[in-house]
Image 1 (cartoon, rainbow, N blue to C red):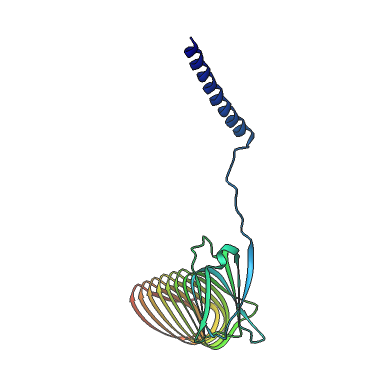
Image 2: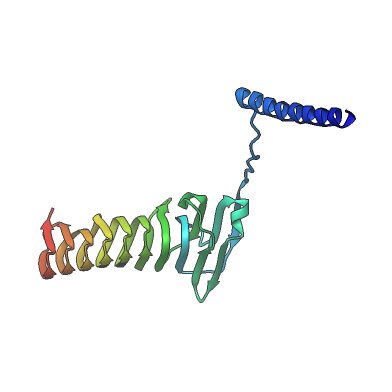
Length: 251
C-alpha cells in the first residue's frame, strides 16, 4: 500500500512540474517575454595613421574609399569602422606605394570607410569590391592611371594630361573633369562613363561586352573584339577596328 502511495505521489509531482513549466512558457509567449540572445553592438571608431610619402595606391578587399587632395602636402590615412574590424585593415608603404588590405569579408562596402590624404597620385589599383570617390577637390596630376580587377564602382573628378584606365571584370567607372590624352581598356563587361571627361584624343580597346563613353575633340581610335559599344561626344576623326558585333556611335 505504501509503495502505491509513493508511486502516486511521484506521478503527481511530475504532472505538476510539466504543467507548471508549460504554463510559464505559454504565459511568456502570450506576453512577448520570450527570452532572446542579447545583441552585442560594436562602437564605430576612427583611427588616424601617419604614413610615409606615396604616389601610388593598391587596395585589396571590400571597402568605401575617399581620396582627399591635401593642400599642405600631408600624407595621411584615416580608417572609420567598427572596433572589431579595425585589426583586419592592414596598411603599409613600400617604395612609394601605399598598400591597403582588408582581410575581413564584410557584408557591405560601407562597413569599412577609408580616407586617403595625399597631394596627388599617379596610380590606383583596385582588387575586389571597392567604392572609390574623390572628395574635396579633383585629383590633379601630369599622369594618372587607374586599374580595377573585380566589381568596383569608381566616381572621380580629374585634372590630368595623360590618363589611362584599365577595367578587368564588371567594374563601373564614372569620370569627369579634364584628361587631355586618354587610353581606355575594358576586358569583360565593365562600363566606362567618360562623357563628362573632356579630352583631345582617346584610344579605346574593348575585349568582350564592355561599354565606353568618351568626349574628345580631335581623334578617336577604337578597337573592339566582341560585342562592345563605344559612344562619343565631340567631332573627332574616328578610326575603328571591329571583330565581332561591336558598335561605334556618335552621341
